[in-house]
Length: 385
Image 1 (cartoon, helix red, strand yellow):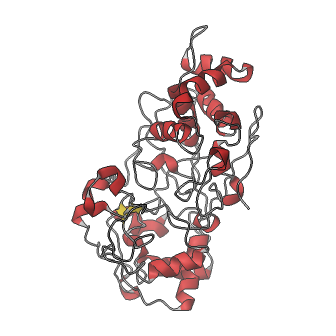
Image 2 (cartoon, rainbow, N blue to C red):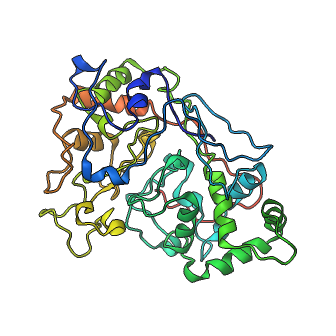
Image 3 (spheres, rainbow, N blue to C red):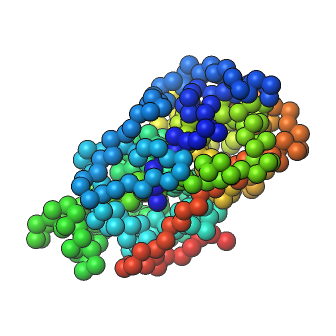
């Protein structure tokens, strides 16, 4: 359980440019790759990168200590109104695994972010309370503390807001009943004392949705991926070749840059786009749903590549069943539809080069695990096949 990767010397290019990208260089030019021009109409979606040596405020009260593995130089930023404490993290961990937080007792946070699936759920699209199909693929929860906004479309500005959204929405299905559910959970003997201690509640004071979200968010900020083969400089020869391709000929680093291998921006890669490239009834328009701007149609967040080898299937709609398939689509320039991001071009990679890229991505697998704590257990059904 740990925070962000400002990585090793192997990640020098990504660390230095922190999102500007090195894509487009040939393999001969990898040592000094030129920065790729930014798409000007996306600048508004991108959080500014801190200096390479900057340390985010840890937001921790005395007694809380971040555990930083290899590849993670600084802890994530923490909101001033939700400081980290050991007791709050422990409370959030129990809540994360407790299916009683869902409307029908069928789901917990862990149901969509289970360890067996790389902290995703192994499904093309998520399943919510009552077995309700949800419209998008579940991303891994590793390093979620470093997102400047959450969900594929970026609609939640913080982990706290995302937790409220998941509890009220299809994931947990609570809707307008969320305040009553929070109070109910807070009255349970195994939780009452912990909520009172963590939030300073007086006798008879009800637990609110904001208390639940604050505890869940504190725990999720400790779910940090480091100590990968990449971070430990222990890549295989194939992965080494894949890294050179990633930063050079394949151009992957144009969007998958920085310590967490994402530029934090939104791109149209042609996935799920109607043949004409225009929004149609029922189409998932991604970022456009948030901004209402036509130019944001079918743009979705660039996902982190940490733990990517364990989180199949891929893309926001789960349409790529394997990592090799996803790599071939992206290396080939995405799906050829009108409006596709101009940064995407066919890199003309051979089968051997595709295999090397996959080997590099496998070197980003996180060794950490989500292990259930003592106390309430996840009584919900595991949706994964």
